[in-house]
Every structure is written in C-alpha cells, then in structure tokens.
Image 1 (cartoon, helix red, strand yellow):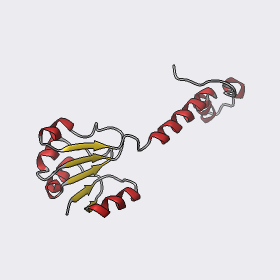
Image 2 (cartoon, helix red, strand yellow):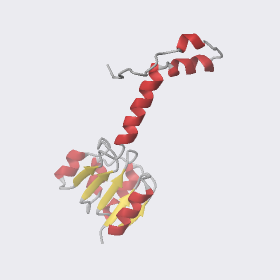
Image 3 (spheres, helix red, strand yellow):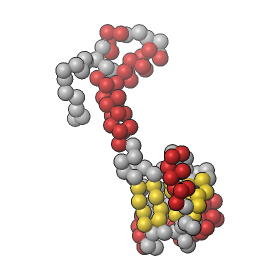
Image 4 (cartoon, one colour):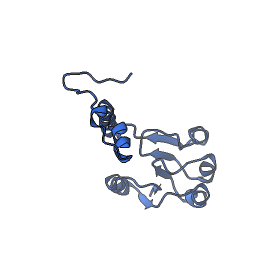
Length: 145
C-alpha cells in the first residue's frame, strides 16, 4: 500500500479522502532535519506552506514518487531537485480561489471607506468621523489601479 505523509494542517475531508487510497501518517509540521529522518518511509508527502521540501529532504526521500502541495504555489518545494529525481510535484491552485476573491473585495471595500486609517485614528484615541467618510460604492465600478 502507498504510504503518505501529511505534515501540515489540512482540511479533515482531504485527509479522509487520502486515507481511502493510502496508508496515511498525519503529523505536525516538521523542520528539515526531523523530516529527513523519516521521509524515506513514504511514497508521497502532502504539505501546505509551512513544511519546506528542500533538496536535502528530497535526497533523503529515497521512495518519494510525488510531492503534493495543498494550496496555490510550490515555492516551498524544490521543484528542480524533485524533477531531477523523477518525483512529480503537484498543487491545488483552485483550492482557495473563492476565499482570495472575497478577501480582495473586502480589502477594496475597506479602502473605499478608509477603514484602515479610521481604525488607527480611533485606536489612538481620536474620533475624526468626517475625516474618514470615504466614498459610497453604490452604482460605481471598483477596480485596482
């Protein structure tokens, strides 16, 4: 049976899905040295952004066939080294698309109403309501410039 190491906190449903197809060890995020000591026991590793899958980790992962990132980028994975070793690197780029879009809209709304500046002002003991009125977005098109 395929052995998978999960080293960062991922969605419980995702863990259960992987468990249906493989033997899974779901451990806490590890530093490079600690990970190097155990990675040779696994065929696959599933990480988020905290675990760094470095050249050293990849070299120690003698049985690794795939490195998966539960998230958008692969900046925490040495893709070049994995490729040299014939290890597949994948990610889930659409995993947080809706959340990222919603966050963008929330930030645009905050900026249109001067919320960050007003927050700083109020926290410093001032109440300058008219200074931070901002603009009403009703019937307007918002964009990033």
